[in-house]
Length: 192
Image (tube, rainbow, N blue to C red; front, side, top):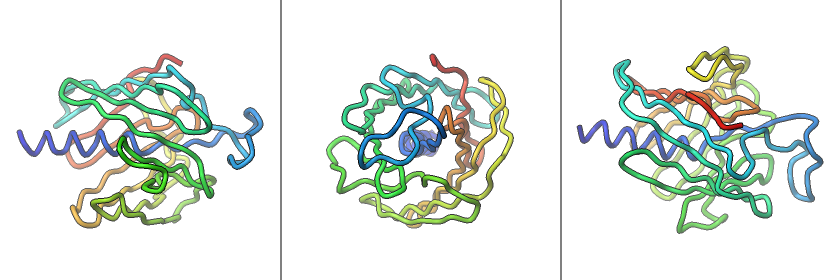
């Protein structure tokens, strides 16, 4: 059970970190923001509910909610039955970056690349481990309880711990599915 709890914590932390966001033709960005605006996900009070599935059984639900969006920094709270945490995400230097409560923008880890292409790779240190992100594929069709989506497939590899997560993200809704071994999160519903 301890290994499942550790896996759940790792998946929840990674889910909070990753959000791929590219939407052409949205509202004009402010100075310092990318040439495109975030998709539907990055708006205050938006919420996503995921099923946590282990060995093909739904074990729990996981909720992500955009608490607020101030000055280009998005506060995202995530929770399930056993824990709750908050992350902050913002765009800088062609990347979506993320940091957790108790940290600052100086501690931010790059979690998504603007205009990412297959084969793009980058590494950052998150304070405890080196995280290597690689875009494995683009245009991947993913079906989850919330529907079918065209996604970017990204591998997030934690060098020290050896954990490897595969994310499927969509321009409009951000993370759609996360998978590792016998565990996965799948988007069940949104309120937007």
